[in-house]
Amino acid sequence: MKYHPIDPKLFIKNRKNFMAKMKPSSLAVFNSNDIFTTGADSTMPFKQHRDIFYLSGADQENTILVLFPDSPDPAHREVLFVTETNEHIAIWEGEKLTKERATEVSGIKTVYWLNDFDKKFFEMMTQCDTIYFNTNEHYRQAVEMESREDRFIKKTKAQYPAHNYAKSAPILQRLRAVKDQIEIDLLQQACDITNTGFRRVLEFTKPGVMEFDLEAEFLHEFIRRRSDGFAYTPIIASGNNANVLHYIENNQECKDGDLILIDAGAQYANYASDMSRTIPVNGRYTDRQKDVYNAVLRVKNEATKMLVPGTLWKEYHVEVGKIMTSELIGLGLLDKTDVQNENPDWPAYKKYFMHGTSHHMGLDTHDYGILWEPMQAGNVFTVEPGIYLPEEGFGIRLEDDVVINSSGEPFNLMRDIPIEIEEIEDLMNK
Image 1: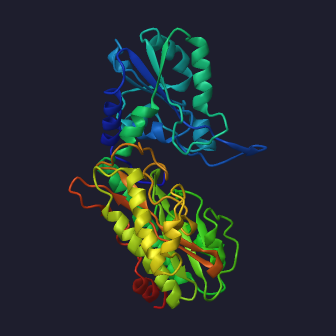
Image 2: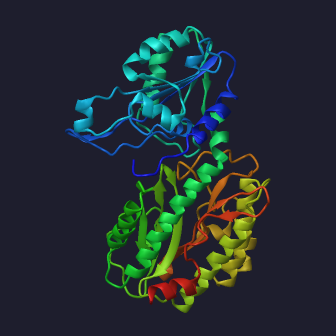
Image 3: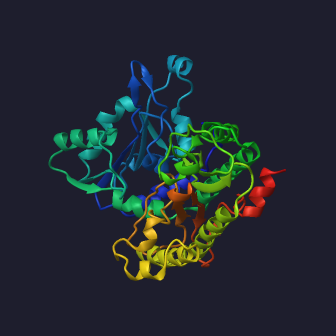
């Protein structure tokens, strides 16, 4: 791994918290992700399943974690299975986890080779009544492919039909939503790397560069600072491309007078950052661009103040909509008649700001969290309002990542990333 070692206290604590929520006489199983093929003998780079990483820190393929807090054998209350490494694997694929190293990374004392799994698992299943399956229940989930977890569930139900079944997802949704300080530090590291990438891009940008040139500048800076790369497919959208919300082609020329909407973030130690900034190709905003930009910035700043314990996500978005409506009226994009005649299910402001303002952040860019429960200290949210004007040839989105604090004062992990017009222009015109 490129990233520095993570204190195993994080994973020890995460497992303890998870097991405290399990039913009596139950065990839970977590599988690593598959290695996905692209054709012939080629594969995509491996990306670990976030849940097994959250609970063990194990960051390699063909890994299984079993948690069995009521096991009659104390050695089987936490068990990690990893692929047996050897000299051949080391030569062809590189170093893999030894049993000793797996213990150092995870804090789990009992580590077996993966080829012992079926035998050990049978023994543990004869001693429990319930098994927790790790199904994907994220509210944005729309995955059609069959995962390693899916195959494991099918096989286990066929082999052990008399057991009770439970879900890990409700437990993880709540645990992963509240970040430990070690996690917040890792998120800060990801945001700091994003900061260096953005500053590099500010110095590089000028009329005539291609969108993919800026993407390459980000990636260069990310990789050289131990990042895993982009946390998600980056958006580098110049001119009217900014009005396509998920524009990822990044293949157009950046032209004099246009703006570039950048939505990009570094990933560090599997933790994501998620930043949006909108910059002028020639280093100077026009008066109209400034007016719209500052309106978006004011909405972002006001929305951030509402990210405090007790806030309800749905009500928060309603309030942000009111603030945006006021700004759009001030810009001449809406009038009071538009607001009076609006459809309550699709308010007038949605014509120019059609997406949500905030989502959970963490190991996933759209991280786990219960949207119908009040926000609480330790949650990390994005704040990303935007105004999109295809008729005027530009769109503006500004986005930071914010930690909710018990003190009530939100903490901006992206506080050092330039966002004010004057600072961006100064950096671009040095």
